[in-house]
Image 1 (cartoon, rainbow, N blue to C red):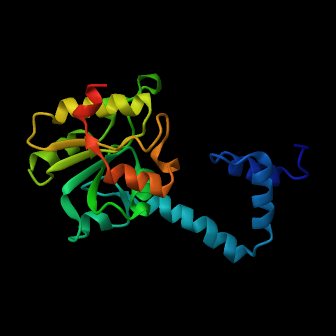
Image 2 (image 1 turned 90 degrees about the vertical axis):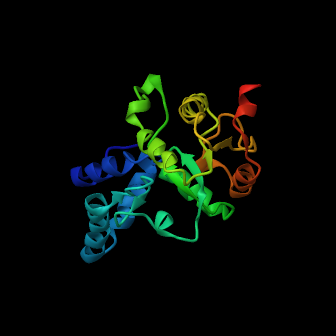
Image 3 (image 1 turned 60 degrees about the horizontal axis):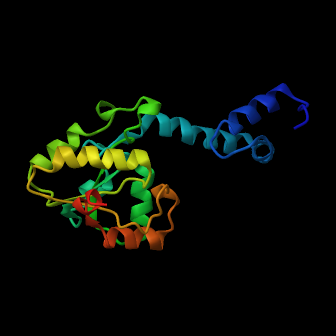
Length: 206
């Protein structure tokens, strides 16, 4: 891309292009669009992100993002609390909710085990998961992690931690292709994968 005529414009484009999936040309187009808006609209736009960063919190039960101490899913008494679905991050909660096929509750790990990235079990929300299972309320734990090597490693680690509890351990049916991340799976495939989930022990015999 050719040098920009303004250092201020260049700085704004650099900040915009630091977001994932946004290249310099797209960033320039977005910045020029914002530049056409009046100052009050820009203040409202930027203020929304400042307020988001300052006030958003993690649910004190499942670690989902929320505005209050407890998220709307954990607060919903109509959810099936016998089903506890373990996911990598909040994007996976959103993906599964969009299917309309799951009415249980969630637990957000906050990542997956990845030695190459320096992420170990102690970096994840595993202890709080074990405490939730110990209450005896969940009857089934669905390990809904991405079908990647890191996801499978994390699934196996959780299986070893949970296998002695009196609960059913299941995983998504392989409608989600190996190597896929949940947030990119289409809603129909993801919905079928959770409805047709299989006992995790079946994966150990492959």
